[in-house]
Length: 77
Image (cartoon, rainbow, N blue to C red; front, side, top):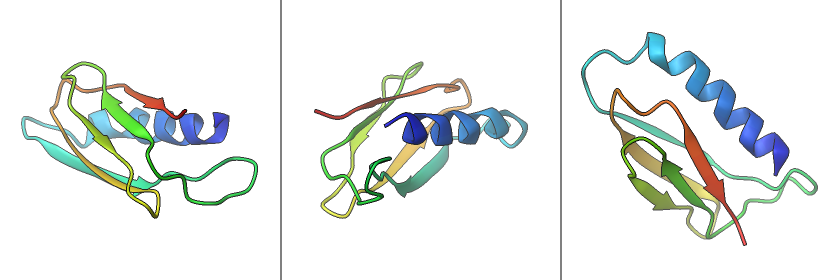
């Protein structure tokens, strides 16, 4: 789980230089840090805008974010 969070933090640390004044889409596959297996049903939330999505059965997700979105929250139960 920590590796997932660190990967997404890294992703968002490089995005501000790319984002200008347009919505962008981030996408990827959420995997467990212990097994590397895709994780279905993970909630990914853009903290500033509140936009969210849930990873599919293969752990894949896609989320449209605004220029104000600098942080995502990952929730998996």
